[in-house]
Amino acid sequence: MLRPSATSPRRPPLPTAPPPDPSDPRAAELARRFAALALDNDRVRLDGLHPLKHGLRFGAAIELAVSPDKQALLALARELCPDLLERLEALVEPVSATLFAALAPAPPSPVLAIARRPPALDPSALLASPDPAPIVLLDRPVHAGNLGAVVRVAGALEALAVLTLGGPDPWTPVALRGSSGLHFAIPVARLEALPERLDRPIVAFHADGRPLDRAAFPKRAILAFGSERHGLSEAIRSRASDLLAIPMRRGVSSLNLATAAAIVLWTWRLGLPSGPGAR
Image 1 (cartoon, rainbow, N blue to C red):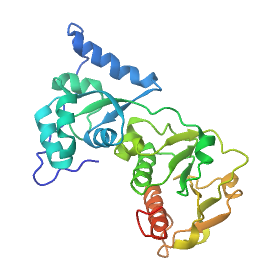
Image 2: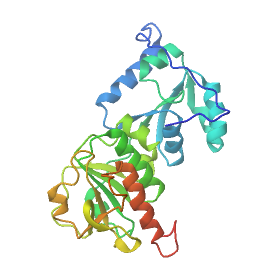
Image 3: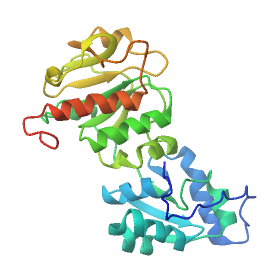
Image 4: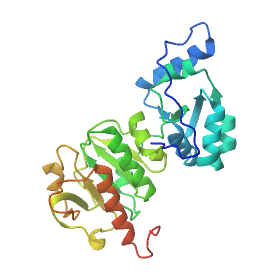
């Protein structure tokens, strides 16, 4: 979530608005396009500057962006992403506060955008990739915001992909907000099931596992994390080549899903031959 700095003005929440005036053709068109996203598997909504910023940096096809206060948005961009200032100036369309409030729940900063979702990936090709980086697997995640936060960590620390088994669509606006748009930096997809035959080792994380250390990661590992409520399924645990646990203070029963993924991926990065950033 965007947190205003000491120099960033706080924007009061926009009022709840009635539907846009149907006599305004542009307003009606924008309302139609945003409403249609609920049934559109090819496009996603980006709420706020951070998802739009990372979408632009990582090649997202942005179809439109609107703001009720374009100058305030550009001032924020000048502080947070000056490299994108010219592109945002050309891309963002000013709209009334009333229309903006009718398009979607108020985002953390004054911009909403529509982006094309990347083409569906081929899970078999991804799992067969020779890239030594790990794939993060989320087993039946529950909260889209936590799922997005895992994508944010995985994208920042250069995991190969994030895959989910069950749970919510990983490309919902809530998940995209949680990832700050880093869905566009790495492949993200939901699977119905893992293939029966895998040539990647599964490293599963569970409180009963041996302590995590830098040497724990074989190349091309699938790093499996259980859901917030139910933990890892027995089906995943039974296929794991190793079961690891994050050492924690006595009495602490668990960590937030994204926090656990961050610890594990950073430990993997520390164990790379040339340190963080190497492959």
